[in-house]
Image 1 (cartoon, rainbow over the protein chains, first blue to last red):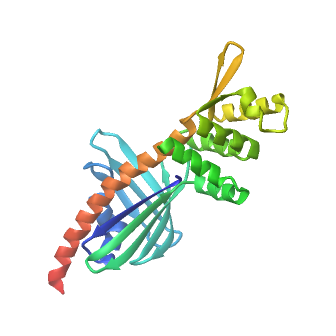
Image 2: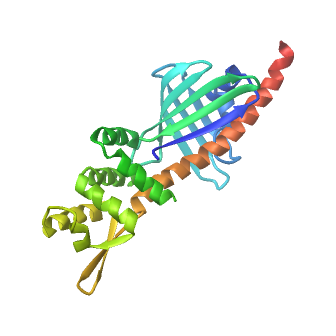
Image 3: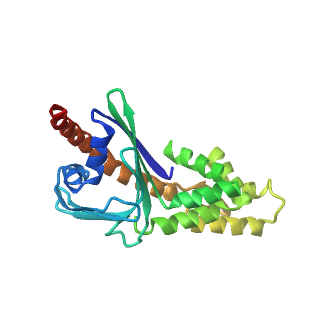
Length: 141
Length: 116
């Protein structure tokens, strides 16, 4: 329940996809949930380096996310912390990309997991993770 | 979104007790129950059960309604809904972004190929 995983098959080599994920020019072409423009795309792609991306949606609202690169292993693995600049609560989450070469190009797996994963892990140690899973199933159904 | 993490903390805290988990599991199965029905399987007194219900209520996990002298307890989906909302927000963002990422990477690949 606490993380989102999406898989995409892309007809391009992992190196091409990795560049699209990490370069300013690349990010400017795809980042955001609709066709609105990317206004700022800054990346410093090394462990400890930071990224910042600001985009405008078609409804005119602007959103900015930023974070720190946690794992950089081109062209197969990229992980970074993630925080919405407009999120007053300041919740930080983690984004991870795994790129696997396939016959036709790349299989990309995105995992975006929340802070609450920490709580979930603690919960499992305490033995009540199952109860929570059950509740989630209940409400998801 | 703003209070999401605080709400979730309360949810987790409320779930950190075996009696409260048993109460929730029972409500999940039966839909609703009276306070005395909930107290029955436990070797604890009614006031102790009431305290557990207070914690679950504060976390928004249950709803209590009074009908005459009987209090009916039901599960409340709100805290789990917050988790679902979190997922939906990012699912929307990433689903569309990744579609565009794939299209962009494929166009870049097409440009690169002739160079080889």
